[in-house]
Image 1: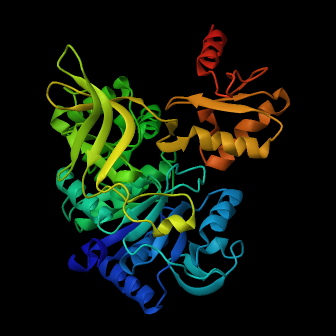
Image 2 (image 1 turned 90 degrees about the horizontal axis):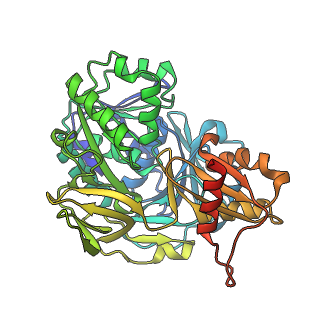
Image 3 (image 1 turned 90 degrees about the vertical axis):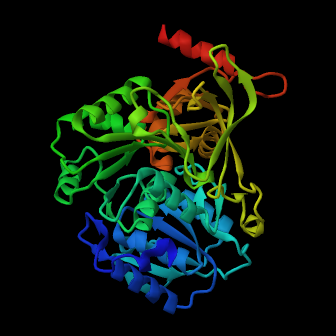
Length: 471
């Protein structure tokens, strides 16, 4: 079975969530077999995910039984979901029971608070290698999807479990959304090792989150930079969590100050801090920093995971022995490429085991990598990759008489708008659309968007405007 769930101790807890469900590996295998008995044809399934046992068991069953799930947030804006449905015409939905009246369809099966609905759309031809779909942005509901092939998820789960030294005694904490590539890898790598996974819907600022982790003896945690910012504010370093041994980070670049804070805390409390790096296009993780080097290599993403290879394109040598260039990766976890419409689901493997990330990286004299910039127009806000172009499109669709340009960094998105009358509407609107906290967005009114004679934005003038505002 997928992730070898049938090979592990069947009496052991595989999944426990904060809704009250506790599934053994035997329960997981039985439910996967129940799905199989439905004889669902190979087709696209929209999975509206949350961190719960029901959500996870559907994903495992679809992967095992050769369906093609598209993992989406259960909180995704309805308009964006309808757009994706129009583009990809899913034959089935796997959704929380509370959404059954909202998404019409024939009810075929239910388990652990989730239901399987058959839609009006017929199955259509799909590439036989295609195993799963994820949105590239994770938040804006972009029709651009990452196409995973069979073997990607398993390879990354195996190699990550190896580099983290996971055993069946581990109790992994999945606080990141399971439809987010890093959250999914936490699940996959722990289940591959025969360990247990705690699925948590409560957020990090909720005392119930930490109580659930402590009671259930969570031993490994993975957060994005924003996760650790919250944890520092709420006094995580003063908490009594004796079973929590591993702190991992991915999904964006930590500041050197935050990196040092986590690494120092781990060192002083007998825990380990593991910095990692990855993308949806590489099934989550492709780099890992040995925790013994965390204080020595502040800010580094480390080296490639087992069976992977990091390299730089267009290398430029530095005087200190370092080299910079665009970061590339080769390995069995590299996905097939992208889809922009359902016809693209027939495409073959376009990446062919090699992915160019668009991130500018430095490799030091010892061979360790550091992310120093981003080539493309993407931000990682609260750990979620967000397309600036896609956000502009959403805003222009909602407000067609206004002009917008988005810029920013991994802390804030700057939204430049030419209509002062709607300035106060933009933050709540785009926050609801992206499901990202409104503190990530900063709206600035400008008389006009500076453009050249070809209509291209003069970004330097916008940056000058930002500098003037700060002064």
